[in-house]
Image (cartoon, rainbow, N blue to C red; front, side):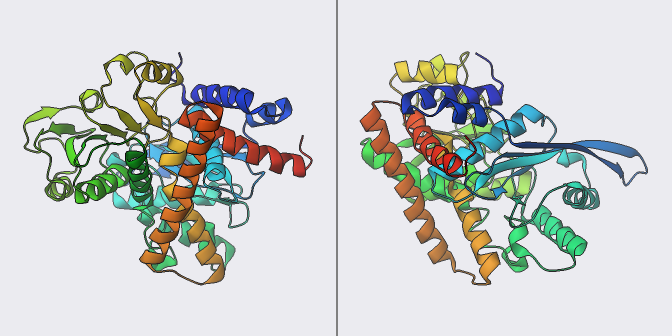
Length: 411
């Protein structure tokens, strides 16, 4: 089975659409992105050298509204990954009941090799060269390699180009630039809310063990919240390395260590582990929170967790999921588990368009309500259709997309 993330998305589309009886023309339409932008960004570096960076943006489908989110700055970015991410975002918005389509993009670059000034110039150049953008058509947000800071630069560049303020044109920016509170924590917070629902539904005991791959915005927040509820985080790993401790890792101390050392590697514990080993720990809950396709046919047989919460996009390949199903491991899919950021980005756009800004309690309360509703709808469909949580989430999303596309006369 291919580890190509777009192949993964298409495999799920085929399986879920057949179960749901989706119109074949809708499936054909959803098998390709609506619009693709591929361009280059030439830039003079601080040392005087000249570099050309490849950039991408995909508008996957906008039947349910303007496309948005994610802008990924990573060294291995390719078009198939961007297409897959745009497709997953389309499904994610529909699963979560957000009136928006799916978009994704970014630049092939290793940001660790950029100075602050180079990163700013690249961020501004990306939004300057992006052909179609704005609050009513395409709203870029943050992803791996980007942050509130880069999105603030993009907003400033967009507003300089247009000559007027438009805070709803960019997502995931700081609250100080008319952003929303809770933006950078939203994916991890939403994943926590979904995990707590799944824990209750599946009789996971209090103080259950958890392993987390990835300790960025998502894994870190989820770990912090689960640790606060008394769950035992026994394994954490990122690109720099990892730590295992059966007694439980002190997450606040780990956060301090990561802030000082730029990674989990070297944190003292029972033993050191790496980013792959953390996936195979014997735990109740596994939270892959980094990148796609980390659980595949070659390692799925070694997965020992009882429940996998997909905090990253596409961390489990279709072939791996078949193996996990045979082992009785529950997979709660990415398009549900990590939809918190998409939900809060929708809140951010609403606030930017209305100049009515909300406090954090309101944001988290509305996030919990909306993502819990999506979880319950997914569980209900999974039970009614006797299928996986992933298929159920996709069935719900595809039915919504089918209605929108037919109402518009597209098919």
